[in-house]
Amino acid sequence: MKKALITGVTGQDGSYLAELLLSEGYEVYGLVRRKSRLDFGNLEGTEAKEKVNFIFGDITDMSAMVNAVKESDPDEVYNLAAQSFVAQSFREPVASANITGVAAANILEAIRTVKPEAKYYQASTSEMFGGCIEDQGDNFTGYTEKSFFHPRSPYGVAKLYAHWITRNYRESYDMFACSGILFNHESERRGHEFVTRKITDAAARIHLGLLDHLELGNMDAKRDWGHSKDYVRAMWLMLRREAPEDFVIASGETHTVREFVELSFKALGTEIEWHGSGADETGTDKVTGKTIVKINPKFYRPAEVDLLLGNAEKAEKLLGWKREISFSQLVEGMVKNDLELLKKEAGKI
Ligand code: NAP
Ligand code: G4F
Image (cartoon, rainbow, N blue to C red; front, side, top):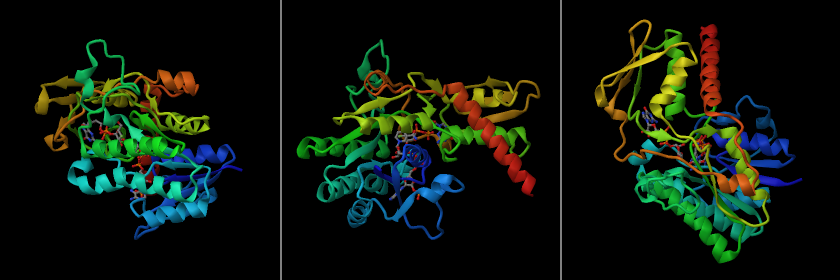
């Protein structure tokens, strides 16, 4: 039986990855940080929660990571823990650097000293490409493993450190250490602060008469969105290989935040009409004329990543990876899930 250690097991990806590895017959260990109120995040209420072996520790603490590797004796380590919210990284750049960046070295060093033959996966991100679109020329077909990096947030800068230290351990110590450069991926388990979940939750609330309108920042930003379930499969496939290599994982499509809003409301039978531009733009319900979307500049970022588009050709060819859930299925699934959750909640009152 293979053994895997997952940091960030309570998060969106960690919970899906734990379920996948359990279904593949792994013994799964999950790192959980101590909180004043014990909770297992996205694993709460799942069968996986009963099967995962939890180890308490914080990735910023080297000794905790040494203990975690000793206790789990893993064949594979997936480092998914991070302060993963880009907007928050502008408000806490140093904590983000320590958790999202430097802590990767704690884990790599723990593996190197305790179990150097364990395979290591680092959760790298398309946010590292950031503003590098200008370097890509006119016929841009998406960022690849060979594209330049130009992070535009403290989060992106921290992730770049983790990405390069992973590569450095691979080159220096001949360790199986690799990174998946994953583009945005969402799901019914996505945190409510991210734009997709904020939109699907608000659309469902407005539909049920529980919210007046949705407030957003930059609706022109474009993202390459996929489903987390498809993306955790790619992580696992990367560690199935004989030799470590980095892979871009993406859908190959890009959509604006505005399109995500339109599709979310459409899934509930509401068509939106847009009026004005910039901070004065509003979205109204085409039938009732009621304003349901407004801009609030407080959601603008000090520096924005305008466009993300990935090219996952290498992963498709070498890993045999392909996404199974389309953009429209993703949006509709998230909206439906939020609607059901809210109806259930209302039933309790
Ligand atoms: P997420 O839902 O925010 O999960 C983050 C996880 O990290 C949570 O389990 C959290 O625990 C844990 N964590 C945070 N700080 C920690 C610390 N100091 N010590 C131990 N655990 C800590 O993120 P996600 O969307 O699943 O993403 C997983 C990873 O992929 C992250 O590294 C993210 O940056 C990266 N990534 C995500 C995407 C995406 O679009 N989702 C794209 C590219 C890369 P608590 O439950 O205690 O908060
Ligand atoms: O959903 P977001 O907060 O995700 P972002 O910044 O793209 O980061 C996510 O994807 C990265 C991969 O590229 C991950 F590494 C990272 O961990 C995270 O999972 O914002 C998406 C876009 C941004 O351009 C933002 O400015 O939506 C725009 N936006 C517009 N209004 C908003 C809002 N974002 C949020 N969170 N809230 C708004 O009201």
